[in-house]
Each structure stands twice: as structure tokens, then as C-alpha cells.
Image 1 (cartoon, rainbow over the protein chains, first blue to last red):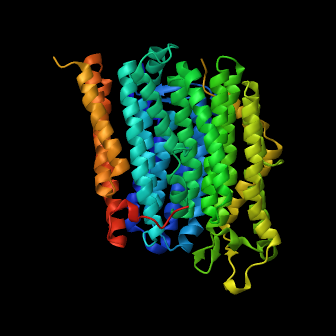
Image 2: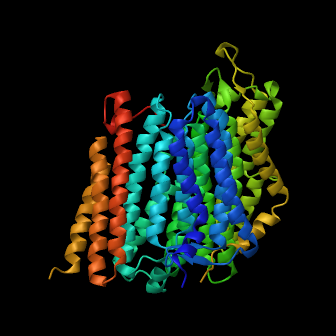
Image 3: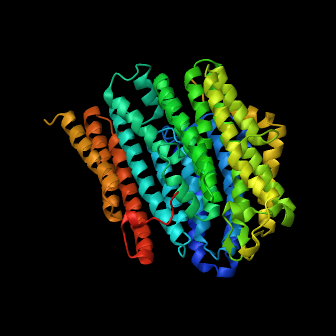
Length: 495
Length: 100
């Protein structure tokens, strides 16, 4: 039996992040506009503290500690996702420094919202109870709704915020109704209690079937899988680019983490049924995400469809885990999802960092055509974008290839070789729209009548972000073993 | 004594009302109200199950949900006000700057 103080110690990283967020919101009005960057450094300091706390436990990676009578649990799985989320948040904050300055959005509360969203994500990945997972999801979403609309002078940003809010609140409603039905069927909200009540009896109760579908739909919205993806392109395009990067990477990773935990730890007994459901979702996601991305002319919108497609690839790992659970296949399927999202983080953050600071006059150059002739004007910027696009397309020797390789291997091991082949075909199709950006940068001359040509505006913070992203993409592409073994060690215990 | 199925039926009707409200109604504020109905439908379920299962967890969740619904309404109304200032409209169909 642990005392209350020991429970608080378990969630110390969450407390630090929430405390720093509150401190930022208090300090914000006291900070003169020219000194707002101090708040960013303060939030980076809080993150460094958390990295130290969670990273210090890496030697006891799989030690399972639970607190508040099993409402939250810190195990290897939670530690893996938390470390990923700290990294992503840190890079987003660094990326935001020059971006907010260029957009004249010197808002201190921006960093407060990032930290609040991060604390929600941390609760999601550590939640061992449907209540904590729901609370974490809401904390993350409410912060992101506001962040999407922070550029109040832009109608697009406001519209993105409004659309995100309507669909996000709708999806939380679905999720919560699913949770309430599951509580009725299982008699408890703890994932362990749910698993014990369901056992392996299958869908003998119609309420259980409805609850599973509602949970899948609720999480489907957060993960942006087809047919719950409608908000994604609008929100990704309209939101400020640094916020888009944060949503595309951190919120997707955290939603996947909570989603896997609910379906593996809680509803693992229904794996035969949910793996069929997710197989269907994964197929339509791959088809629609990749095909619609081809016709996009705005690069943020294209990356939104690309992020939908990447959610489809990650789902393959879950389907494989559901098929192969009980044998070794389950673990490799889940580990491949974790690996995929970790590697996806580097390339997507890098691509959005380039887009955010790629500026024409005072505005963002976000049309693909704006990249014309970039290789001649700024060879290094064009090369970085080339690396990120190649990695997103999944071409070796980049991280994107490694991610896809392990996901496809998991599918083959689970006896779904045909699914791996279909996904491979769509990966080849996706190379078309990623390579189009490269083609425009290297082969096309800028339109002489267009006036001012867009430039990548360099700054020290942006250099750090791009260096980290490129290093991640190339190093993990060449030497993936440390990350692979970390993912395999920290994978959820399967039944 | 009211049977459990009656509570679940009421909650299902409320939930479907909310669901259709979000999908059909075009006014942002009414959509927000429909979302609140969905959350409260879940609350009825939680409290009814809690009573019949004799477990307190459901009531606890319901309390948290009430707090979250308030937070969600606050954020939603704030977003509506900012959008309304810019567009003088709360109609969802008129939000069409972004489309594929």
C-alpha cells in the first residue's frame, strides 16, 4: 500500500509540466512583449527536468509502478511514449521561437498551452483507467482547439479552430458514450477490470459491440483515420504551422498510445473482432489518404493527407498484433507501431519546420509551386526538404524506410502478406506526391512574374530543430537497432 | 423500481438526439448544445450503471464529465465569439475558406 506522497512522486513529471504551464500563464502578463522568449526557455527548462526524471528510469525500463489505486501506471510503454513526447514538444517549442516572431504572434500563453497539451498527452499514455485516459484526451484536445485558433487575425486559423472544436467535441462524445457502455458491461472503468470481465467471450452482449465501435470511432477521430479524417486537412492547413506540426506528431503519437493501451490491455479479449474492424479502416485510410494527397497544391494540406496515410501504415502494426497476439507476432506488431510513430515524428517535424520558415515577404510560402527553383537559391534548404520527403516516402536509407519495413514485417509474420503488398503499392504511389515537391525544387524555375521569391529564413533555433530532425532521419535510417530494441523492450505485456 | 433498461433507453434516445443534432443542425451554438446532450446521455448511463452495479466508479466519472463539459463549453463559446467577430455569422456552412 503506497502513501499519497508516493503516489504524487509517481506523477512528478506531470506535476512539473502542469506547474510550469500555470507559472507561464501567470508570468505572461508580467513579461514585456520583447522578452516573451524567456517563457519559451522556461518551458524548455521544465521539459529538460522531465527528460531527466523519465530518462533516469531507463535502466529500470519495465518496472511497473502504479499510483492512485491504479488510475495511472508508469511502465516501459508509458516511459517510451513520454520520452518521445518530451522530444517532440521541445523541438516544437524551438521551432515556434522564430515562427511566432515572423508571424508577430508573440503570445506567452502559447507555451503554456503547449505544456498543458503535453500534460494531457502524458496522462493519456500513463492512463490505466478509462477515466484517466478520457481526462487526458480532453486536456490535450481543449488545449489544441485554442492553439489552432491563436492566429486571430487570420480567418483560416479561426475556421480551423472552429471546425476542430466541433468535430473534436463530437468525437469525445462518442468516446465517452462508449466508455459509459463499457462500464455497464464490465462493471468497472479500470482496464484490468474490463479485461477480466470480458475475458475471451467475444461479442455475446450487443452493448459490448456498440461500446467497441464507439471507442474505435472516438479514437479514430483523434488518430485521423478514414472515415473520421474530415477535419484533418482543414485544421492542418488553417492552424499556425508550428501548431500543425505539434498536432500531426505529438497528438497523433499520444492518441495511438492510449488507443493501443485500451484495445490491447482492456479489450484484448476481442482481438479477433477488432483486428478485422481495423483491417478495414486501415485499407480505406491507405487508399483515400494516398490518392487524395496526389491532387493537393497546398503543401500543408498535402502533408495532412500524408499524415492520414501514415496513420494507416501504423494501423497495419495493430492489425498484425491483433492477429498474432499470444505468439511473438503480437509483440513485434505493437513494437512496429511504436517505432513507426517515433520515426515519423522526426521527418514530419523537419518538413513542417522548413514550411513554417519558408517565407515570401511577410507570408508563408505554402504552395508547392513556391518551392520552384529552391535548389538553386538555397541548396542546403532544398537538400533538407529532399531528405524529409524521401523519408516520408519510405525510401532507404532513411528512417521512413525502417518504420515501414518493421510494420510490413509484422504484417507478414502475422500471415497478412497481402496487406503488406497492398501497403507497399500505396507507398509507391505516395512517392509520386512526395517526389513532386523534390522535382519542383530541383527541376523547375520560379515564375518570373510572381515577384518576390520565397526564401527559407534561417535562425539559430531553426537550425537546431532541422539538425535534430535530419540527424534522426539519417542516423535511425542507418542504425535503427537501439530504437528497435527500446521499442521491443517497452512494448505492452500481451496476453 | 425503474428497470435498468429504461435508463439505458432514455440515454440512448438522448445520445442519438445529440448525434443527429451535430450532424444536421448548422448553427454553431446549437451544435455545441447537441454535444453537451451527448455528454449528458453518457452521464445518465454512468450513474444508472453505477446504481445497479453498486460500484461508485460510474458516479465518480460522471462528476468529472460534468466538469469537463463546462470546460468544453467555455472553450467552445470563446471560439464562437472570436469567429463571430470576424464573420458576423455562426452558421457552420459559411465556414468555407478551407476546402479541398
